[in-house]
Length: 401
Image 1 (cartoon, rainbow, N blue to C red):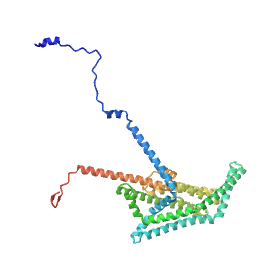
Image 2: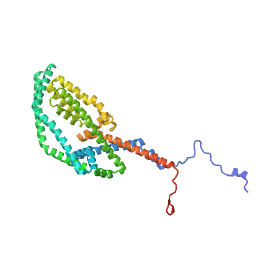
Image 3: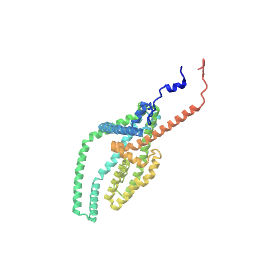
Image 4: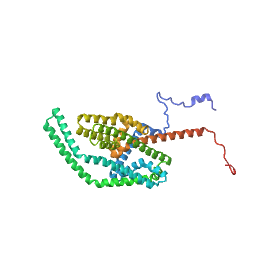
């Protein structure tokens, strides 16, 4: 018989646990938690991805630069033709609307461009050749003036004369080498002009078809591709229109100063200023130096200083007034940004890069802005559709669809 009271004395009592000995607990740990413990922080991974992205962009730029350098004989004429066709394309379109075939309109526009180029070449080169003797005499006088200034500054006449002679000898040698190189590269020049005219004609004639082909094969939806190509074309046209206005203004100011100062080849100076204005930053220095040197050699120091002031005003203060009016808000670029991208693109892609840097950068900004605006409008429309009541059921010929 079991008596509960006696069971307390018969059952073996558990041994007491020593002090400090606690029962061990088992904790379940997820393997994914351990993997996150030993993984790199998120900002380190983002930094690594950004570094690889920059490396990829650098490799792409180096590869594109190398490819353009290797194929420059073909790519540069095509790029020049594309620029001319983009700028002059509206003329062909207007003639086509007046029942003129695009081929005939392209031929007329191309003939006009060639005529303008020949006239500018004859004005510049013809004027220089016609006044070559006077220019040579003026340069000799300028050297004498520099020598006189050196004497007044305390420089020995013999060293000045020797430096002038050595400089003239080196200049003559460089000129002969340049003429030889020019004769050797005449074939390349002829090919460049011929292929540029060929590319310009076909891009003028088939411009809309080429754009539709590019829109379909750009690798993005057709609507997005249309926005991209449209902004690039618009930026190029507005940029060169603004440059033409600024070039005309600079040519008028400098040419008028040359006429007032009675400088020979005033027309040639104005044409050189107009043409070189299409080369960002460098063109202004070249045309300004050309005008000041001719003025110094023909009219003296005072007239040269006045011409220098006119050049600085034309390319500086007055241009800052005219250029915003000419460009308006089309480029939407800070002048510092224009300078940076122009020098950067010029270092990578040469003269073509300098010319296209500002309009392509402006086009990129406008494209990004327009696509962001379209995306925001689409998101707003989607939110409106989610909050709107469901549309009523449509009834077809056989009842409820």
